Amino acid sequence: MYKAAHAVIMAAGTSSRFAPLSYELPKALITVKGEVLIERQIRQLKEVGINDIYVVTGYKHEDFNYLERECGVKLLYNKDYNTRNNNASIHTARDVLANSYICSADNYFTKNPFTLENEDSYYAAIYANGPTKEWCLEEDQNGYISQVSIGGENAWYMLGHTFWSDEFSKNFLDILDKEYDQPETADKLWEDIYMEHLDVLKMKIKKYPDDFIFEFDSLDELRTFDTSYVNNTRSPIIQSIAEALHVTQAEIHDFKTLKSDTNEAIGFIFHVHNQTYHYLYDEKKIEEGEVL
Image (tube, rainbow, N blue to C red; front, side):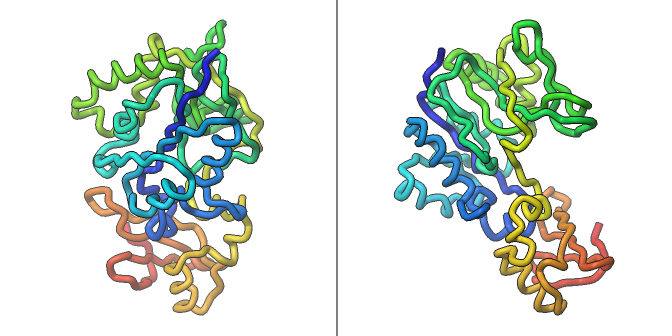
């Protein structure tokens, strides 16, 4: 049995797919059903006695400063948030990893998933009935994850938090240290590194009901979960579009991020009824037609 000593909440990414809300505010600081996403997660951790909480920031990191004062967490700045994938956030938090929860700041748990003690390292999972594009898991006879595949059918798939035992943390950091400076590592999720070393990095599946863990990859997905966003997106950009086109915010939908040649988010595509429009952040204007 392992007693959780810390929690690390990763909140460094730009979440560009969540356009345009993430352009205006970090996704972790968006309010869902009356509660800021990351504040809800911090509260749930503290409810079970996990008070040593670290938040890894990067994009718009100044917006998170209030959490130290109001929620009693510690902030760690990931300086490579825009040039590396989330393995850089793990590297940033390396000195505090030991019997730790590793969480994504944009997850919404309908019930508190955290416990002070855990039998083993695990990755939270939800079951997909039918085909899915998510990261699907298989387990061996001892319950440890034996295979991870991207996409599958009728399978448990990764979603939500993980718990790393002290042994798992040490093993993972040993591998990360050896591979961190390799050019191909920069774009890898920490899960990519994990799935390449399943023989050393032993982790079980913790299975949850399908109404327990939610993640919103787009504003349209958030609107399905929190219908208050249908008519009021809390976005000044979308409000300005609605006024310019003489429509309601509810009529603006199907958002898709526009990126530059360097993979930087420069705006987004959206639809009003059957018409396609695009909006470029720098130009602050709306034009008909999809930009490719």
